[in-house]
Amino acid sequence: MSFQEDPRLIEAKAIPMAEMVERLGIPRLKPMGAELIGPCPLCGGRDRFGINLRTNLFQCRKCDLSGKDQIDLAKGVMNMDFKGALHWLCGDRPARQDQAEIARRRQRAAEVTRRKREEQERYRRKAIHDARRIWARARPGQRGVVATYLKTRGITPEMLPEIPQALRFIVDHPYVRRIDREFVTVHRGPCMIAGILNKAGELTAVHQTWVDRTPPHGKAKITWKGDPQPSKLVRGSKKSGAIRLLSPPGADTLVMGEGIETTLTALVALPVANAAYWAGVDLGNMSGRMQKVTGQKYSGLPDMSDVDAFVPPAWVRRLVFIMDGDSDPAMTRAKLECGLRRAMALRPGLKGQIVHPGEGVDLNDVLMRSK
Image 1 (cartoon, rainbow, N blue to C red):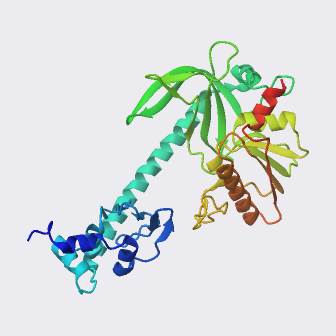
Image 2: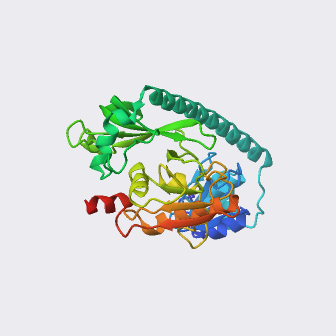
Image 3: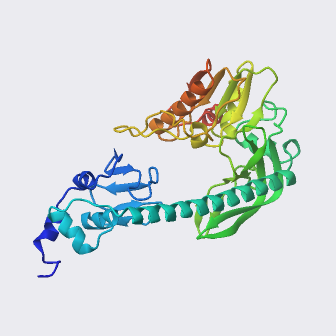
C-alpha cells in the first residue's frame, strides 16, 4: 500500500494543529486571530514563527522551517523523514529532537540575521547621507514655493508671517521611488523639503512634498504608467524623529500632529501658550511599537522594548496629540494612546491629551472649510 493510500495519512492530517503544538512541545506560542505566533522551535526567533490554524500552513521568517500540514511540521521540528514522521504521529514513539540539527539551524539563522542587519545598517547610513545631501541643496522656505503651497492649504502669509526654518524648497527635485525592484525617477518638479531631526537634534531624514508647477501650486499629481503615486516621500531614517516647526524658548507644552499642514493649522488657528509645534511624520512614528494583547485588535499599550520610539524631550510637561479623523478611528486613537502612555511612563509627571477635530476630517480640513 502506498503512503498516499495509507489511512494513517488521513489520521495524521486530522490532528488539530493546536494539539500538534502540544505533542511537539513547542513553547510560548500565543493566539493571534486565526494563528499561533511566537518563537521558532528551531532557531528561537522572537515572534518570527506562525501556524495558521485554518490552513495548517506554518513558517518561520528567520530560518527554513516551513510547510503545509501536520506531517511537514513533525518532519521539520523533529528532523524526521516522511515515514518516521507518519509513524510517530500515528504510533507511540516519543518525540526526540536532533539537538545537533537544531544547533546547526540556529547558527545558520543567526548568520542570516547578522547579514540582514548589516545590509539594513548600510542602507540606513546611505539613506541618511542622501537626506543630508538633499537638505544641503535646499533653499530657505521663506523665498520659494513653500508659502504658496501652504496658502493652498488655507495657511496664508497673514496667518504665518514667517516660514519655519524646518521648511526649505528645491526648484527642480527628482521624485525617485523603488518600483519593481528598481529605482525609477517618476517625476521632477518644485518640492517642499522638511528636515526631520532625531532625539539628539541631528538631521537624519527629510520629508518631501512635491508641488504643482501651475497655479494655485497645490500638491503635485504624480503618476507612473497610469498609477497614481503619493505626492509625499520620506528619505532617510525617521524613527524617533520629528519636524520641529516651532520650538520657542521656555516652552513646556508640545503639540504634535502627523503632518506639516495639520500641525501648522494648530499653530495658526488654535495657538497654545508656551507650546512648541512639531510634526510627527506619521502615526506609527508617533506611537512606536504597540503591545499585542490576546482578544484585542489594538491594545493601545506601548511595547517598552522599542527603544527607538519617539519620546518627547525632558522639558515637555504636557504632550498634545492631534488626531486625524480621516482614517480608521479605533486604530488611530489606539496608536496615539500608545505614544502618550510611553511618553508618560518615561517622563514622570507629563500629562497627555488627544485633540480630535471631528469624524472624517483632519484639522487642516476644518481650516479649509472655514475659508
